[in-house]
Length: 370
Image (cartoon, helix red, strand yellow):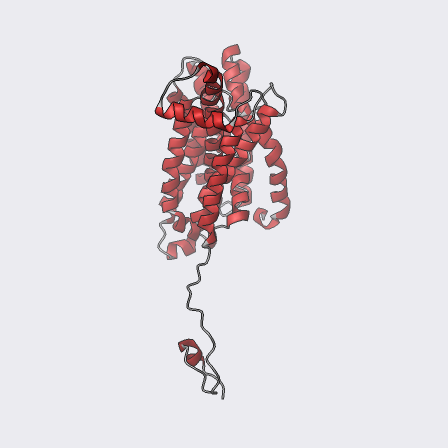
């Protein structure tokens, strides 16, 4: 006699007289490995930061790094034989490395947000013209206000305002014209070229001091990092990440099912899109205002994270931050050691890494460009 479906579902012995099959009552924890992977990524990031501090022309050990951090945090007497190592760690390498990691994390999180909202892995703050627009805003403020006397917050506000204006223009035009994502990317390329030309025009008319400050934005660099820059970038990042994680499920609905399906699930799509775009533009603008234009991190970081941890934004967003931070940290470490004592700007190094990956994305994701 055959066993009925109801009997099997209820776990009762089959009527044929045979022994009941063993049941596994343990709950299935789908994706339970992802928090472990994130924790492992955080540990690797901390170790990478510590190791990066020890890399350079001046010999600094891990013990020196630990001792300098303890002395700077809790105070104490600075011994004469330790003063050089202390200065190297606390005044040069550690703020530079923390700024590089924080900037990479911020750009990567911004890229992951934009890719989810627009449902395309080829979107980033750079490809949509947000970063070049922010760079032009910063360069314009430097030109009008002076390279040495202008407060940092004026540059930040100028970069943020220009980036928000350009984002509103591009996305509003795309929505009004019902543009496909491929057309939106082409529009972003046009905007990028426009603002790069405007920045070049400012360089052409600038004096020597202003020109030097503007060129720094176009290269992308963390050479002049200080603790004030580190604090602002990390504060913006640490305030933005919990906010976007709060809406991660709604972002999943848009990314996986589209606007109409997300609305049917109760997601208020338009205000959510505007709010998250503002957050992503804020992240990119703050980085640009301190580090200049750094391309490809906002594109490559989320893609690496997606390959490792999947597309669920509850895990993808923090994983993107770790991937982007490690990527920019690696690029900066290579840039300051490969031709030491000369330092290659991090924006140049990361372009050599990101360009081949970007080309691979274009060649392997043809459906995203249709």
